[in-house]
Image (cartoon, rainbow, N blue to C red; front, side):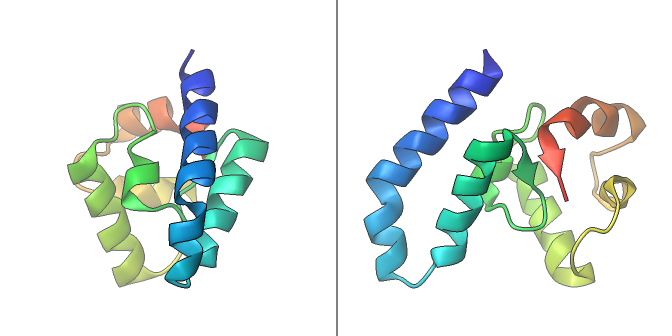
Length: 102
């Protein structure tokens, strides 16, 4: 069910927001969304705050923390790097791993 919702959300974002995205020079965001449609996983190194909220258990606050850590420390090289995010422990990481990629 969650996978279907993700696919629908990504389709709508591509069809409705793509022209706006390209107007502002954010081609990377559209590329990231297309990659998510193909793999069904969210790349934590390129995802926007809104895209990260599609991960079960990740809301706006946690998504903001993930992005802040990514900006501060650079790209994530391991899933375990997420353990440095406040609010993500071993249990949370295990829960979100199936939905993310590096």
